[in-house]
Image (cartoon, rainbow, N blue to C red; front, side, top):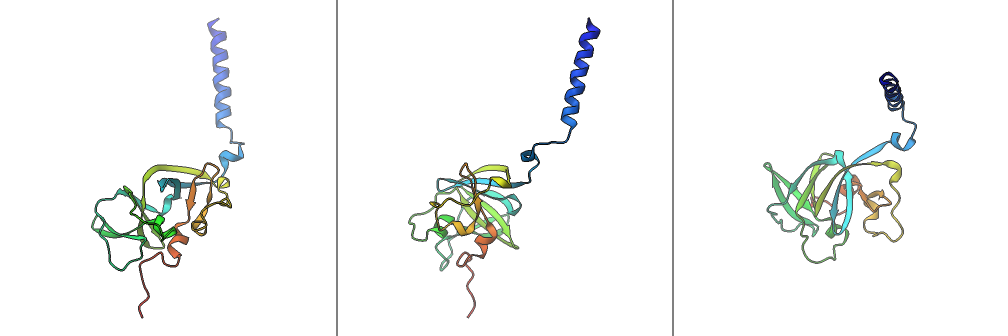
Length: 177
């Protein structure tokens, strides 16, 4: 009787092994994904491409810089490097008042330029199937739409950092006259 039970167990294990070794047929599992770093900012969930993120750090002291655009909160120092700190809330809505109470800086590198975004909290890394990214709904904040890859059904807003960096007025650099 033990031999019969052993044969059944062996047969079951071999069948499971064959199923696990077979190529996946589920298109969703085989779909290309986009690695993202998700974070929260002004009450919403956002994400950026992980390959654009150099680091995440707690914001210590912010050194303000005179005559910079309102959305440039100042600069922060990290490992001997000075990095511009940007408030997207003030970039999207320059008329907004008050200061951002953000604890973290997401340091990004785009086209060889480094800058930091003020964010409230870091959620972590996720892998988003590209098919889940949709155009923003009609009632979405129009100030943000030109700088987005899209929005997911669960409300994750994916920012295009390259478009953001190329936007008029994003950088503190002014042309020399």
